[in-house]
Amino acid sequence: MTNSNNRLRIALQKKGRLSKDCNELLKQCGVKITWNEQRLIAYSENLPIEILRVRDDDIPGLVFDGVVDLGIIGENVLEEEELGRIAGGEKVEYKKLRTLDFGGCRLSLAIDRDQPYHSVQDFNNALIATSYPNLLKRYMKEQGVPFKSILLNGSVEVAPSAGIAHAICDLVSSGATLEANGLKEVEVIYQSKACLIQRAEPLDGDKQQLVDKLLTRIQGVQQAAESKYIMLHAPKEKLEEITALLPGVENPTILPLAHDDSKVAMHVVSQETLFWETMEQLKEMGASSVLVLPIEKMLA
Ligand code: ATP
Ligand code: MG
Image 1 (cartoon, helix red, strand yellow):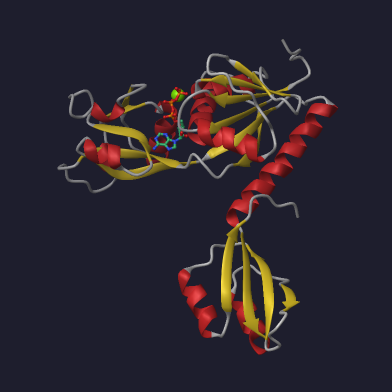
Image 2 (cartoon, rainbow, N blue to C red):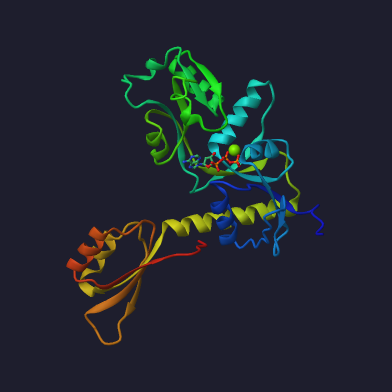
């Protein structure tokens, strides 16, 4: 058994929509973990890190209470827990280190598909089923609409057809679940992504250094995911025009071609996706052999 005392402790969702992306992110950051389905704690083989695998609802509290050093959690769950604690008179402290590029969803109000809808005022005195009573309450207060909520921790979408509530306030990504239950989305009340949080109480020097290193790596992974490496052959006289067409490019690398004096090879890192339309325009300008490659990691 490894001594866990000096390890940086990170809470992640054990099983669910965030798990795969969290594990993938750690892997891309060079954190090697031996996963064991049965175990609550997993250890990194190459860094002093241990992973606490829990229900996502428990993650904000574990960070607020300083039981773990870091956590990855949906902003929806984080803010719901934070509002709940504040409403209960508790003081909540944590640091939000970074918004991540996965776990995107929205918290929306939805009603029966056949019911007419005009504005949020339609919810006046309505009974709304939700797993997010605090986020809903904050929104309705801002809108000045009185309502009542029923707390359901699952199967929220069946509440209207079961006669339990007039409407629901639930997470949506594609909208397919709503549709399958005869509901329509009428108001988006909160946009969410996964985020990385740290406990408020300072970490010891070594741990904080490790956190900083992880953050730099995460930034490198995310930047790389948004960037492309583009290689092409360009007519010498069109270099400027071609550079202007490529999104987010500052300093292209220009290399001579072995058997063609009229063209050069151009290598660039572009911060954005290259669309087919741009590729076609490049071709019209005389560019050839256009290659767009994904980038795995980046360190500026
Ligand atoms: P747990 O068993 O850990 O409590 P859960 O069932 O509460 O899991 P999941 O359904 O795995 O939670 O969702 C976790 C998080 O994923 C959500 O809180 C939200 O931030 C994010 N998410 C992204 N897309 C969706 C979606 N379409 N529906 C629900 N959550 C989504
Ligand atoms: Mg949960």
